[in-house]
Image 1: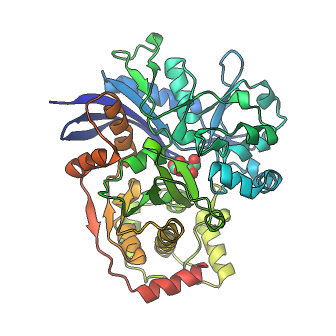
Image 2: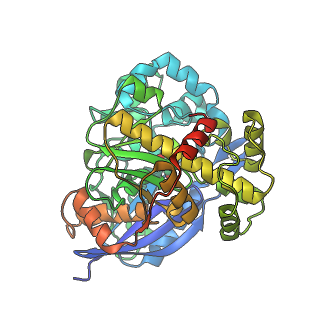
Image 3: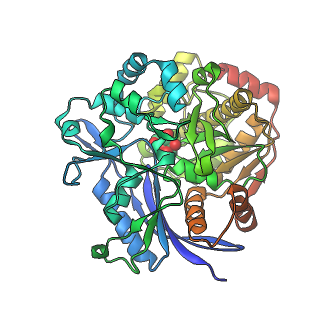
Length: 476
Ligand code: LFR
């Protein structure tokens, strides 16, 4: 059979994409039909997402896609739009990298109890979790007027169909979701002063949200289907692993590094190591850590005026290894800004040589990211008891041969790189299963990925003692 055509809307921190997937038994291919910039806007001191520009990009993309059976939407996590009683959007969603949560997260976590928060939600402490964003917005007229809170993919889904809901994989990133009861953590909301009525009913990936509204004039008025609407949930579906003994690095703006489990790890050691238990597709647990990721490189390239990245990477490959390392997870790197200057400062503070050229800065970033990948892969194994034989690197970072090789060397494990479009593939695979054209569990979906997608293998050839010493310099 030729397969069905499905549209994946994948909104990333730097750009949005609409892809058309063709899926059937033995068939899985993807074509990008529209790509548009995602340019956050600072207004009156607050960093916002330009959500209407994103929505226009989605509509243009769905028009360009032509007739499809269904549409699935994924994006980054935690951020939301607020609707008033008439369903109108109250202001532009605020960007998770905005500084409004500075100091709020610590205070709120202390007030609610860090142990209780972890036991209920299983989430790592990230200053921008939805809980802390809502705590930062407490008392604002906007929040007082709000009747509904919709996470970004659910907001786009609402504008396409008129239906409200909260898809579970993304709901699990709010720190307001009870991961064992698989329900909103209403007690926690009440104790945090957040109205539980704001949160719409939960929905599972694979369920139908509704048909696209006729007035949008999209070809064939397809259904919108809930997918793993947290991009990382879809990316993990798109990891072409066989068996269970693998780690993944979903490598883009962030590196999400971890393992896939059946049950959460809620120990005190896990909480202290800041590992998260996010809900995955088919009831799995994404046990992982956020590593600052290629954001460091993207922001540096922006500051350098959009230098030629392939050339920079070639020069970085010729730089000496580990001359300078920084801890990429240092919160100073979270907000947008002059990353090369912040990296130089971090080196100065730690007594590391200050990178003197862009190539040396890039090498410092990639060595440091590989070390952070190593740290997270090792911790994930120790804390979960899951043994890992290989590391799958998926997402845009799978294209970065130097980073993939350094990650293999640092982890002392083979890296299997690709697919680059794991998120969009995970998105269309869940839709294809809902449409009944592919069958089976995640293992079956991943077998189709292995059959159809290009995967590049990097063997570890590192010097373990050198990596261990570099890791000590990074701060363990
Ligand atoms: C990756 C991601 C991460 C989440 C961060 C902020 O795109 O979704 O999983 O922690 O963005 O939402």
